[in-house]
Length: 355
Image (cartoon, rainbow, N blue to C red):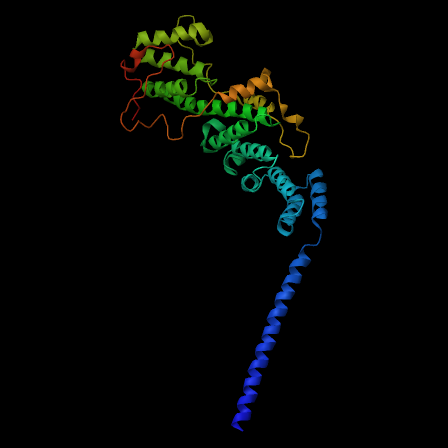
């Protein structure tokens, strides 16, 4: 009896295990079938849906269809193009954080693609807009906010020019590099003007000299010279001030009054209208498959070759360099050799970093 009871118990356990196993295996097959069922269309059908949605500016619908291609057909014939179109759709949907993730993924996944220049360009344009949410929400002036994203954008455009100089996006990227370069200089001039208003002449001169030294090709140079002339004059450094005034008289006479004093009233950042007009010449962002002639821009009178050559000659100072931070071994900066008096460093210590 005991033997029969034990045999029945063992058979019951085995039967239960087999049933459980069958249920588990069945569950696996069921889940697989369920997964397959979620891919309701072929990759071609999903892509057609995405294209139609993009043509109607239905970006969220397009994003969903394109993500379906990337999920269910990651190695299919539409995978690469789907990611390119996804970049565009995300940008149009103002999902800028997603744009940066997608451009990075494209550059990493398809380094030999003929469309890497497009990914770099969109990445640069997105970074140029600033922190993906905050700056776009409040429409902050580029020169009056954190410049981290501007530096990233400059690097993106520089990489594009260095690796794809014949790209349809090269000239527009070059123009944006020049604009960023000028914005960095303007960032320093904002501080210089602030110091001038508070009669902190040494600090103002330091900021202006920083522009003179590290952004010599920027549009802020004339005003920087004017501030240096004014600051030196206010500090009683007449000889040095006259040297700067001579530069103004020869090159930028509009910054001098008839009595020889420096005119600062009309100096300053570009007006909002000027900034908007300047931005109009930038190419309009389109899809990678669009006609790329629209990216030739206006370039403010310069030819395509000229604007690319100009951008190739400008660099940003290292991020570790700041006008408020003294060098590790000294509190003095190297003198500027632009035909200006070397004695100014000794006269009033204008190269000293304000504490």
